[in-house]
Structure formats: structure tokens, C-alpha cells
Image (cartoon, rainbow, N blue to C red; front, side, top):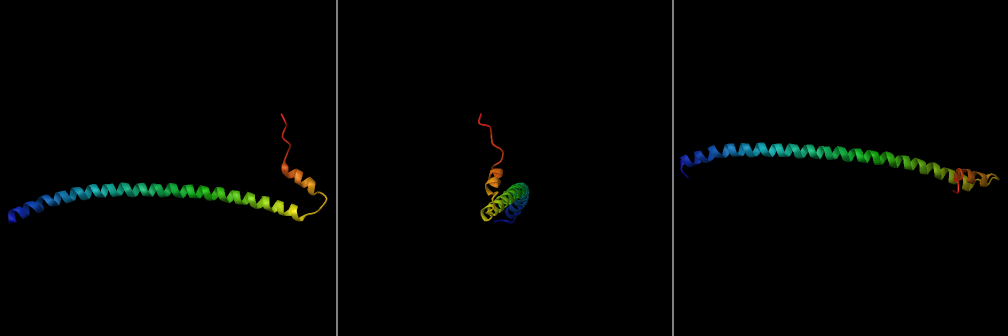
Length: 93
């Protein structure tokens, strides 16, 4: 390779490398932004699920406490308490 050819090769390689580097950095920036948005959405979904599960656990704990009290309490009002837990009777029609 002659010095003129080497100079021409280097002279053409530098702009090509700069263009490819610019395009690649833009693509990487867009990809990184997308991944950040995906992580934000996943975090919000996980937070909502955690809130829902916490509420469900709280309701279940309250229900178990009532059932535990009913199972261990042998008072005369047991049947009455069970009927109260069933709630109001729905109309048949």
C-alpha cells in the first residue's frame, strides 16, 4: 500500500467511523430510554400488585380471626353470630 493510498484510506475511514459512531450512539440512547420506561412500568405494576396483595391478606387475616373466634367460642350465641356473618338475605325474586 502506497502512502497516498494509506492516506486516502485513513481520510475516508475517519468520517465513516464518526457517522457510524453517531448513529450507534443515537440507537443506544433510544434503546436505553426504552428500557428505562419498561422498568418504570414494571415497577408500577409490581407496586399495584403488592398493594392489592396486602389488602387481600388483610381481609383474609380478619376473616381467619373471625373463624378462629367462632371455632373456639362455644357460647350460646354462636348460631346467631354465624347468621350475622352471612349478611342480609337476598330476595328470592
